Image (tube, rainbow, N blue to C red; front, side, top):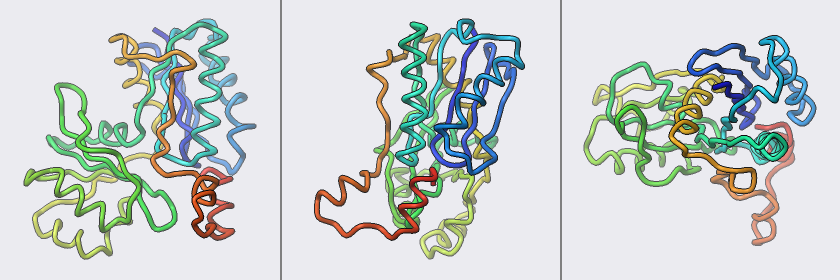
Length: 248
């Protein structure tokens, strides 16, 4: 099966084309260009280089979040459009679960996190389930120290493997110092996820764990700024609004 895989959850996004487990091509978003103008040319160039057309794609794998509203929305809107036009299935993949799957260390319990801006992280805890991962509790957006405490509670005494492309976010936290004393550490993993998301998506496509264009939902975790304002909270600073527009 030919799978087109997309991750636009933050500025470190990527797209990939896979044939079964083999990655035929991968393109990372190594620019400040908006995804709305970068994504389609990047996909077309990748397919052309692999000698393929969109008609050859058997299914899509998409990072469904958590991440920036703009980035996630652009990626999923594009995938939904292709799925509708070409009548192909889509497998949504959690970006945090993809980080967990990237780990090269043996562990039954993994806490994955990534920078969410505003002094917070997106985080999730997973336990090994056969060849995959099962979510423990809910994915969250939370202060780094609080994520450490919450992950420890969810692990219920089990030793945790921590994984992230943003490992330094925990280094200064007092709660993290206690985990270091227990011999735990953060494994630095790549933020370029289209390859691993494609492989995870392929498994779900073959198992029939798919969605059509209408059923694919985004996993934002954090409420949008518009919703926060509507509820009466103070608006974020201009810096944070600018970061959100640029996929941070």
